Structure formats: C-alpha cells, structure tokens
Length: 189
Image (cartoon, rainbow, N blue to C red; front, side, top):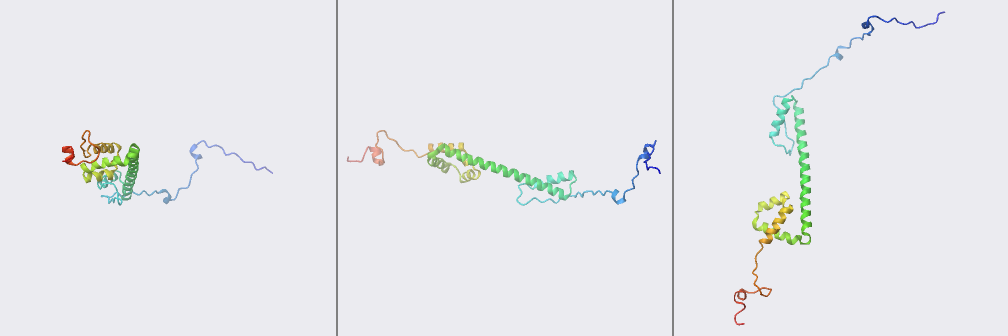
C-alpha cells in the first residue's frame, strides 16, 4: 500500500494563471444608485420664532446654499444652525454684561460705604434737575446708571448744584427772619 502523500503543484510560469477567478457579482450589487440632490430654484427658508437674525439673513443663507447646491432641507438646517449660534452668542454677551453691571453696583456701594444713601441723594438731585425721563430710563434699562464713573460725576454735580444758603459771618446758627438778616434784628429791640 502506498502512503497518501501530498504531491506538490508545480508553479505556473504565467503569473496571470495564479489568479483565482471570482464569479461575477449580481448586477444589482454592482450598480450604485447615485441620487442627485434637488436644488430648488428658490429656497423657502423660515426664520425660527423669536430669531435675533434680521430678515436679510434669509437672502444670505439662500445665496450660500445655492452656491453649494444644497437642498431645501440642508439650507433650512443651515439657517437654524446660524440662528442657534447667534442666540448662544447673545446669551453669553448678555450674561457677561449683567455680571459687569452687578460688579459696578458693588463697586459704588463699596466706595461710598455708610454714606451711600446720602451720596445717592446728591446724584438723584442732579439727575432730577438735568436728566430727561428718557435718559433716566435708559440708564436704568442698560445698567449704565451703575457705572462708578457716571455715579461719581452725578454725585459731584449734585453736591455742586444743591441750593445755596446764605452764610453771614458772626451770625447765630439757626433760622432768622428776613428782617433779622437785613437789619440786624427786629425793630424795637
């Protein structure tokens, strides 16, 4: 009996013959269907409710989308992304400004300490006399009324514009009548 021994396959002198042929794939697997995006003639973009973007942003996004051949859905998503970025930026700026206004208020209170109420009377006297109601409202709405430099200016101007009082050298402290001030005392004394 002979032992089953593997017999070596002689090497082929032609390298192409060593390539194993694969059966052809099904026609459906070979065909890749490419869908061409539908680029609208005009985009029907809608700003999100309460959007801080101006209406002309629609034209800019439409032009950008048209140049890049975006679909209606892609262009709307781009607009909504832009809106979200602007909303986030504005919220961050508003939070930072609110912190600044609060810091100013703290600085003013620290500067005047126990005299804060009295000093604010001087500032308010000045504003009452010279500032319009619209200016006062703007100072309140924007928080600029807490700016330490503005407060200091108003306090100084309020002190300078308080009603003058007549000081007569050697006069007794207290209220005196006009007769006492003009003639040195009441008649008959």
